Structures are given as structure tokens and as C-alpha cells.
Length: 313
Image (cartoon, rainbow, N blue to C red; front, side, top):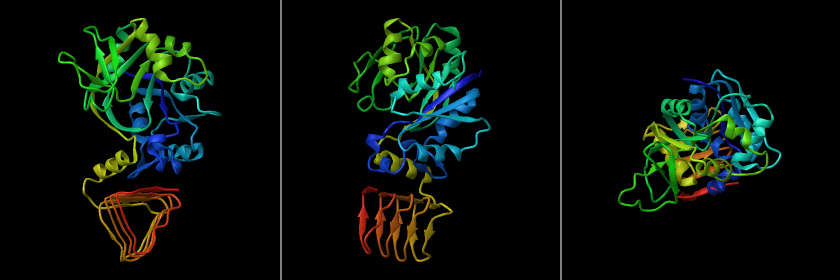
């Protein structure tokens, strides 16, 4: 089953990702050979046939460069925002610009996670229900960390609860940042700053038209620098370093499991392991960089030990 339009949200400030988001928007951070946003775009392309849109605002040029490097066989349109419109406002602005078409539901995906989901159940429910919004859900991974979605027996959302210990009879589900929005709900959005929970979910919930359906697959949040480093190391899986073609690594440097990204410079006698060095960061001679991320116009001191740090300028 296919739909005509999808949108990936990639405009936010990435406040929890600071200091790294001072250099790149969170969805543009390198995750080996692709940016973080790539998995959301790939997922959208599996079900979208005509229109794929990404909104940008924070460090928009960098975000758009990252998008331009991804080839999915479908045109990716950009909706650059003159001011930060928040999630619902950004969707409404893209609609007003004619980027989301005029008919049918629109798939919305957050651009700051790494995910691979089977969305067939989501698309089937939208065709068989009166939902204004349908949330893709996963069995909950950590109710103490993320909000809990509670469904009734018909698949309607009964409540959305804050993180916490579930009640004894509660079956909590996790929202991984993927939803299908009916055209009726999309057309009701106003193109001004506003968030999805207030502008989409609450009105649908109040009208018993906020649905949810459990999908299969995996999702990983990449919300903080520690999440980002863990995601990179998870994809490396203890293997050899990934070194960008523009990086310069001295032959005497010892590089373990690490991502040496665009424009990085690793000087003689340095040791880099379980780390990311990217976007022009320089590791000076005889420096040790372990379990850390260096990004942007960063220079270590010769002989310095950088351990469990996140530096970005």
C-alpha cells in the first residue's frame, strides 16, 4: 500500500544535542556514511510515491547539504522556514506552499532518530478507520524514560501519559516519531508556530479520532551527544574505523573503532578510539581521544587526553 506524500521534520534547534548542534543540525549529524536523517527519508520513500518534503530552519544550509547527498529515486523538496514554526506549524506551512498535495493522508516522520519500521499496519488502519491521526507504536522499551501511549480495545488512544512506572494493568506503547495524518486534520492546521501534541493530537483525542497501531521493526533515539556517540559505535559494532575521503590521518596515528568525518585532521602519534572526529576538528600530535566527540573548529592541545567529552565550536 502506498500514499502520495510524506514529510520529514528536520527544522528544530536540537537543544538537547548541544554542543554538537552548534555545528550541524541533529538530523544532519554523520552516522557513518549517511546523516541521521537518512533512515527517516528511506522509510518515507518505501511508502511515498510522489511528494517527499523536509523542513529546515536551524543551520538550514547545512541541513539541506546533507539532504542533497541522499539519492532515493524520488525528488526531495525542501520547505525552509523563515522562523521556527515548530512541528505542526512546519507541516501547515509546507501544505500552504503546495508541497504536500491536495488529497490523501500524509506520513509524518521525525528526522532525528534511526529507524526501520514496517508501516503496513499503519496504512491499513487509516483506510479502515475514521482516525484524524494514527500513531505508529512499538512495545515500550523504557516507560521511565519516554511517554506512554495507552490504547483502548478498538485501537483508539485512551491516554498519553508522562514517563513513569506503568500501572499493574497498563500496557504501555512507545511512539517512535511516525504518524499518518488524514487530510481533514492536515487542512485544519494553521500556518503559525505550534506543536503537534497541542495542534493535532489533542483535538483528535477529544473527538475520539486519535488512533494507534503497533508496527514491527526497530527505532533508536538520537537526542543527546551520548545517544549520538552510542549510535555511531553501535553501527561500527567494534569494526574498523570509517574515514571520510576528505579527512587527513597521519600514518602513525592509531585509529580504533571511530568515525573520522568530513575535514577531520588526525596528527602523528595520536590515538583515537570509540570516538567521532568530524567537520574539520583537529587532533594534535600525541593526543588521546577516547569515548568522545570532537566537531567543528576544535583543536586539541598536543599530548592532551580527551576522554568522555563532547566538544564542538
